[in-house]
Length: 371
Image 1 (cartoon, rainbow, N blue to C red):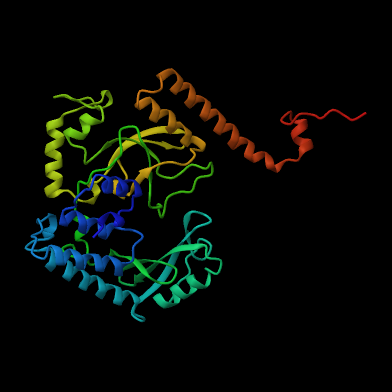
Image 2: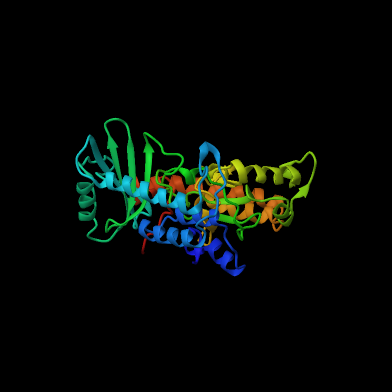
């Protein structure tokens, strides 16, 4: 079975195929589960192949008692049974619950709320899905997220294709079955990637509630400096030096401490530890954070598009970190980009005025009169 087809990142998938990487059963389980574009039915077929290949493989127990006394076969069989039961409940009409939906628009390249920003309320899942499908005559809707809200406070959400095929089911609140339905949340996997220090990366999955940008910037772009999966070998390869008392901004790490941290992650880590460190643009400033990429490092690809707006700063940051750009030009570039974007923003308000007014204000050049 080709596990790489379940990876959200094409860059990582292509790299692993190239190096002929062999997944452990735990890694294969996680990658299949995390696939954002593959229907549940296809994931279940892949789980069945894993069960056939590794029926008695004992899973390492993790926090919250996850995988305790479980094999690949016993866990996946129970997981599929319970997820199917939850999906049946989600689709069932009646009960003390109402439904709403959001949709991903191809034209807007963003998640949008039904009802022009005000959620319409439906009596059941069927009504919500039918209304969403009726709004998709032009084929603009790529995905639908139907949320079922119980009066008790419990909340379920299913991500669907326009034809109703289920891609993902989440229990967002209420009673959580940590040992099975939420077991994957407690996993941490270390899988090789082709990314290097200074690469500009973009998230593959759209941020559902992220703010829209007005200057053409891409949400979530980062200049990579570190990954939580980089041990001493990867750190050295990316230019870091070993130091007992490291200074990160001098490209120094304590290699032994990082290797011990990875050992701890292998035993106790969870999805929230599968993060990246790097620089990003916030408003008109370049910022640094070591806890970026909450969707996980496996959901990033190299950015190959055109940098626009303040995101243009990331190109100079990337080249500076790679040693290809001097500090003086980096600082001048940032001042120029900020000035250009401020000018562009101010000019956008001039549409309120006519040509005569702009000429009188000295913003437009006065044309010479014809003789």
